[in-house]
Length: 318
Ligand SMILES: Nc1ncnc2c1ncn2[C@@H]1O[C@H](COP(=O)(O)OP(=O)(O)OP(=O)(O)O)[C@@H](O)[C@H]1O
Image (tube, rainbow, N blue to C red):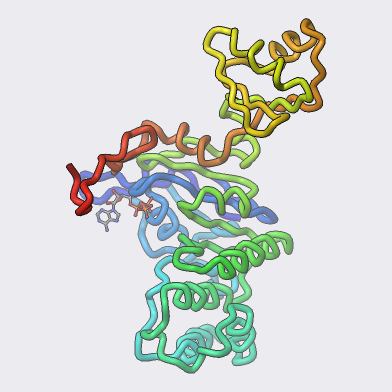
């Protein structure tokens, strides 16, 4: 369990984390989301004592990280995957960490195999790809068989097999009753991996709820209608003011600007049969973009809805 209370970090005039309070519970995967610069990494660094809070506090399993006698057995963290001596092999890197924390050689071999590093464990870590470096960072986080895992962007650079491995591993660890706290900018992956989300913007918590609750906050705009009478229903629905209808299959319409009761009423009045009438739920990405719309510090020129500038054949913007 991670408990942050009024956690604050200032760098000079800049308040990176601004009075953040949240609880990360055991037994579930909790995702930590927020735009670039929102304060996620700073918060995670404070959890493991790499940054000292300017105000407030954070505990792991009831005590500040530094107060734990065997911190690697309490918390495993992946914060900077590249924090490895490039001339050292993955095996030696893990062995050195294990030796300084009273962890045996057998556990080193276990995490090497668990992370899929067996074939490259004797190679210099400096030659590793981004994905292999991530695997090594995750192996190091697991070394002490910790109750709590904190992972900053664990799937960054991983291939699809690696992404699936991380997802399965984290869900298994949470299933064993451990606390799993991870950040990622990949919304589709977060939707598959996390049960609960803490969303931050400009250093403050803007949402703390289950994935399902956060997705449900976005009103469904599209209604999917399956009907053998699509040829007659389509023009009927189009008569409604502001209603748009897309024929996505011969017997399926996607309707925007109306709702399920109005569509059902119109169909019934005309004696048309419906086989399916489903409001289509928005994605986590839609919900996240709505939540953080006013919180983005570093907005790209081509945000959602912004036209992409046309390019000349040479590739230069016109
Ligand atoms: N050591 C530092 N000195 C000064 N400012 C810092 C320092 N570390 C972070 N910041 C600032 O604090 C804010 C939060 O940064 P942080 O890295 O925690 O955000 P983040 O949510 O992890 O971002 P990202 O998604 O880009 O990784 C940013 O504005 C950043 O520039």
